[in-house]
Length: 262
Image 1 (cartoon, helix red, strand yellow):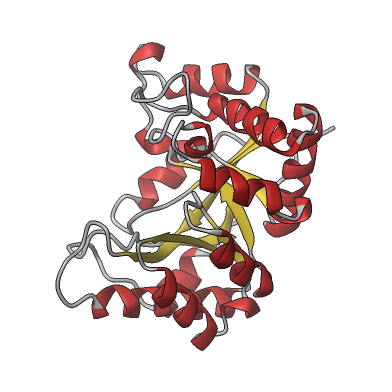
Image 2: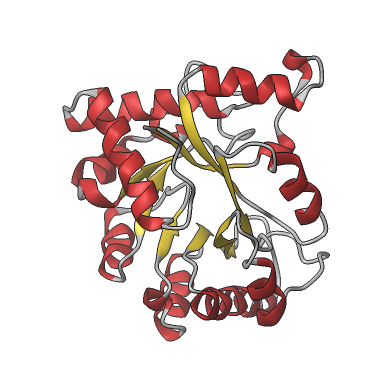
């Protein structure tokens, strides 16, 4: 099954669909996408996000606060665990560290990350981890907080094989986005080539990071097929096998996600 393991459906461009989320979803499902994980980035918009996707069984959700923005409602373990009890919720995140867009003392980011890991362990839900230019601190905090007890995915992976290997050693999956199609992503494609197939996921991060040939335009979950095709090319596999294996990997990791009805 074709699964987009990370997207932001409450932020997609609905202009091509006359502003209708229902039309967008109908078109997306008709394109062959069987399931999507709509990932939260803050608590303020979380209720509206959950309500928006509620009619669509092909969508799971997460709860979390992105590391980039300090001026958000700060989560605590109890609140994250409570929100994670929603029947459609399958994960805690996205969370992590991002030193690319932030400056100064970033202790607040690290503490927020620790809070999410503790909540994931308490809730029994896997983590969705974002990391950018914070390789060692991300891995150190994961180890200190025993993130392996929750498990999860390193989403939109752009790091090197050594970081992927250390995440794999902690039981994590690694997810690749449209970046893998970019011309300058040779090092990332080498990581794709070395990944164990049973830990590999694909995603769009829509509406961001559209793959080639749509780079620079608003992204959509339907483009996850292009990510699958590039992964297949890099690994010398049939695209349908990549689609099937990554779909199974998604439901293995996010065990509470609803599989489509037969």
